[in-house]
Length: 567
Image (tube, rainbow, N blue to C red; front, side, top):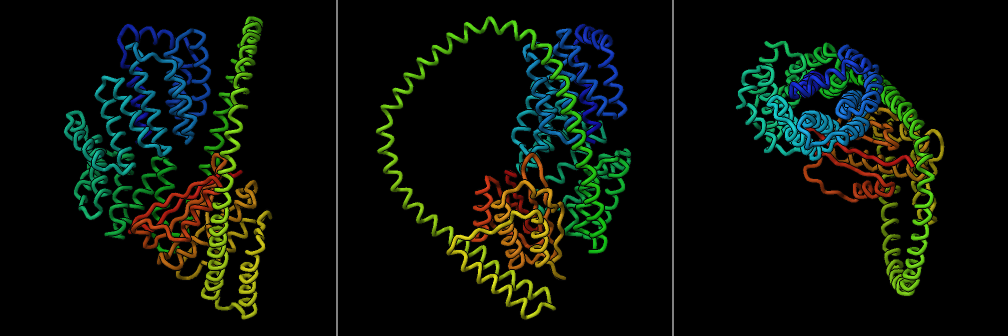
């Protein structure tokens, strides 16, 4: 559905100009066979080829000094990048397009509207919903077309919903339902009605919105709106998952069928995740394996596309750089004298600055002496806190680890128990000697798997995704140590408090960061009160310049997202 909206919006924006201006641009477009070829590839959904040809067409328009057509090429490239999952690349291309357009020129405003719509979508997909709303409002500001207004108003409402600003979202959806154009379009009416009902339920999960959701689905079935049906099924699965398990499961399989008919891999991934949670253990495992296989395939394809798009831009920029090099060499001679004068001026400024620093030095040294004394006091407190954390994480969790082994492994021998207790004793003794755990080996993934397997039992099933040694290859020994202790603490808390029966741990590397997604189906945390263990979790990840995000829902369990840079 998103794809069809995008394509319609592009055609709309680029055809909503005055007759005279439109004719002039059409003449230029018809003279640019590369641009026409790019559209032919795009209409055939051959996006990789379309991207390359739009990029070539862009430079032809630059040579013709036609910035508006060049901007259109960049916007189209941005939409293609977004559809391939390269949201940062899409933002970069769209911002470049906006810089080419003068908002004061009337015939450029509709193109700007399309650009800000693209920028809003990429920003939304990156999770920056407030900024996405800003860009959607800019898209409305630069367009006078009612269809563009409706599309962007709905996008604004969606971003409010994702940002949990439900009142604002509901108000927009209700206003849209009064719009004559939406009332006359069954598909659009169903889309807004479905979004409204789902948002009301998200705001109050005790509210009965079954009638609105089913009414929207009925319209979409009558209209044979497959993308709309997919959205309806997704919302109905969420709505029924905790009130009518059988209905939720039935809708999940209906959504799976639609997702494959639409050839939407993102929706296929999402429905597999829903089936993992809804199905019995045997089918859940099958869906998990299908999810993992599909996810790996998608990541590979999108990675190739990103690399290919980057290579296309690199080659184009290199050709442009070679052209500009000769021109730059001519300018260099003119700038040499100017640079000399600037250098002399800088030397004078630096001399004056150095003299100023010299006068400030004595005052700074005195201040540092005072700060040094304060730091000594703080160091003592830090040392006390450090040993407290070590006792909690290593000794307490180590003992609980042994208890978990005894509970889950009935065949465990007395000698093995004594060995594990002796190891805990050695750890407690080593704290006083400041010994550091060594996780420099290449098998850290196996070490983690061994740790996590000790918590796996008939009562609690633990699923691992992406825990490969390649992820940890570049990670420092300190980072591995902190991750080991953090996961040990999370699983210990899960075992003690959560009442969970399923735990999913997903490891992946993205943008030079390691991302660990933890989720369970336990009772969650009603109010986020970080106890000692979870405080240590945040503290340890913060020491790696990382972040910890706790997402809690009493119904859906606990979700924790841990991110930190590889190096």
